[in-house]
Length: 175
Image (cartoon, rainbow, N blue to C red; front, top):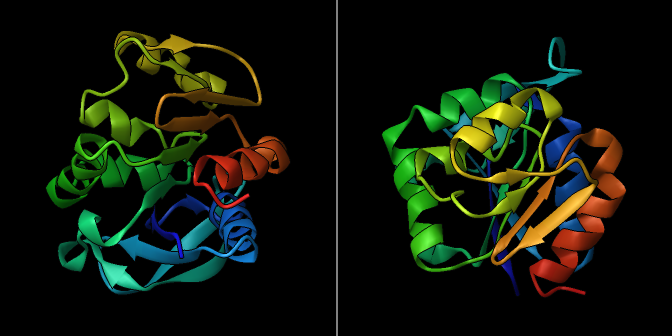
């Protein structure tokens, strides 16, 4: 069984976690939601409207990358920004990168990969407003639904979720 870690915290764009999580679980994966602390955090809709509370299965300080086969980095404006400033999150993501495990990021989710200096020379996509951030990190940014580059799958926004979900199921070797 493929074990997927999903990193998120307050300000997560809810559908960017719930839709891939459901698709991955239907394909046979186990998805563990990891946050800055155990318990619930506040998700949003359209980056600003509070939606549901999401329960974290694990706090980042308790998480080990070696326990997982793949990583999901959902977006939203605030969640990736808070995650990328946390040293435990950065170390966790860096461990996936060093182990060459598959990583999928949608919207702003890939910002955490900027912190581990892993995007240089990669082809990526994301929410268009942060295109320059990725270019400044040395990535080749393209405006398309889904991009796969080596161990990474990137996507732009909730509208792309059907294509993103299909791509990550294949990328995580579930389909």
